[in-house]
Image (cartoon, rainbow, N blue to C red):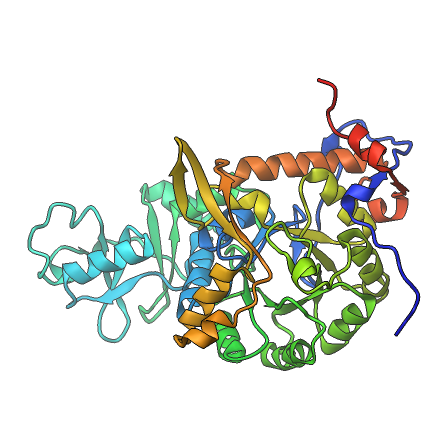
Length: 477
């Protein structure tokens, strides 16, 4: 055994020393940073892949604002793939696969398709896939006989304004304005439907100027997978759904199982999709995941608000020290680190980034928002949302039941390393993200840093005592 006893520090143990600064406004600070090898965030904050934090609604909002949300994996493969598809459909200059049905299908089927995908129109095709018309929700709003064929109420091809698939955004805007239409089907020279442009989607491009988009104008989407069982099949389904980054997420990422999964996935994605792996808390773990092919490494064993791994297993590294140590290796290889867990406020974000992280992952601060999928409850007139660690007893039991384990001895053998609690309702994540970003900008300006790489270079930490920690909080009021 190594008899050398190291001392570990977390965010509350330190402060950032103020430095001389030429920054006169927080607006002059650039908080953009890399999530992974290819993906650059405009706000270096990621909503955690937890079942009470991130599904499509959270992921969509985060990407629109320039941050990101990673969809959790604690659902069926098809359900997770559908969550990714919802993110990819939420915004796009061109909808590459618009909702479509053949003309002899019924109005009932058309209405069901609209309701399932939250769309207001269906492209109508012949049996060969050529566009023959369009059916809108207005066409069937008061129709009582839903067994009629779509062709009975659709607007025919001869009345539609269409454009070729090669159309540019300015050209599309011009056509929509000139003909005062809301939808512009894209059709090739043989009449086959190739996509759809809507006025609503074009307006969104100006409404969210910091949004993270792919080369088709769709929001970026990230999703989590495990390192065993169905992880390859899950990864393939998510890739087909359009995912931009896969997160191999297990509690102890420095396992041979995780390393081998990263190696396998890198061969599967053919270097077209980034792979994030974790969680680790040491430079050795970071090095091994990078050498396996990880495009980013997730750091954090036990710092999460709903995690009690350190109490149950006695394992972990205080989060600031873990980031500092892992950054030694990551910066040598130019691989981003994601600091996962332990973030209580914007000051912790500044400290994590100064210590060497490229972004931070947050669960609890986002769990009480409108966009989180956590269950809402009312207690004594106040609204709360459920928040739980993914190794909590309830989460682990749900997972075991979903995977088909009904034997009592299997369920009672679960050793939880997390807790479940209630979080006060906090409104929209938009407001919380705005406050966190503003606090980060302030922290960077105190250090005289205009960019996150400059923050790492200029930052100096000072250790504080219990009295210093007390002094750092509002007191005597």
